[in-house]
Length: 279
Figure 1 (cartoon, rainbow, N blue to C red):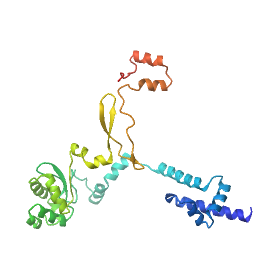
Figure 2 (cartoon, rainbow, N blue to C red):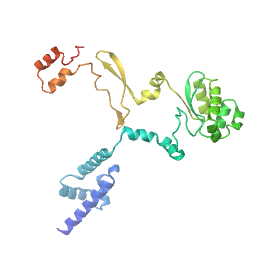
Figure 3 (tube, rainbow, N blue to C red):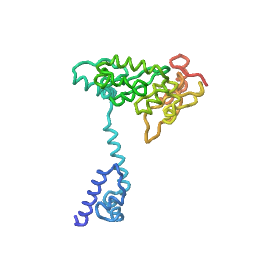
Figure 4 (cartoon, rainbow, N blue to C red):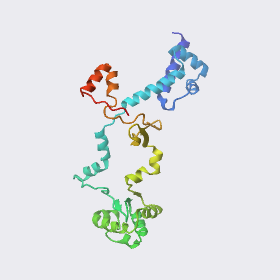
């Protein structure tokens, strides 16, 4: 092999290594050429002679193939997901060696931190530290409660959970939910409404996310459905066709499978299959 050819091969090998290492950034022709100290024109010519494809095509190939490999390597299971959601609770089990009590919406190591009923509707209150506790007592109009020996620290409030929760619950029932949300938010205290289905469906975020999609059903007219909670390249998959009626595609499926129209008619007559009525 001539010395120049060896040099070219070495440069191509270096270029390929650089492309593979930096596939996420999708380096351009000029960048790769500069990396191996040749002009873009020279790099394109020698690469095409060696590989039989242009560097641009190779760049695209590396990116796509690596993406395919990454997709194949991604694994998830419902079981693993469920265990992952229990991570915090499992850690407590390891440390204390006991099965935890069912906490409902509360937090095992924070108090008060759960769903409470306001005068009209429920909402979540998250008093995660002693500073927030003092702020809550002020907003609730009982600043002296913050100095109660049972409730001064989070550790004490957790130790007196029933008393803490009962005291806070009584206070929160004196005002409507939205009033509490406004005042608590002003004070920087974590809180959030517990929405009814009607509220959730009418929420601006629900509309913006397009998780609820509308479509026309030939038999039932305007209908709605909840979309898959996954977007691909920023887009949510649209509703391509409405849910089928019972037996709507029986004939179509059997014909595609190779059965004749006469055979399908016989199956319908014998009630072997159901065929939806014409809409």
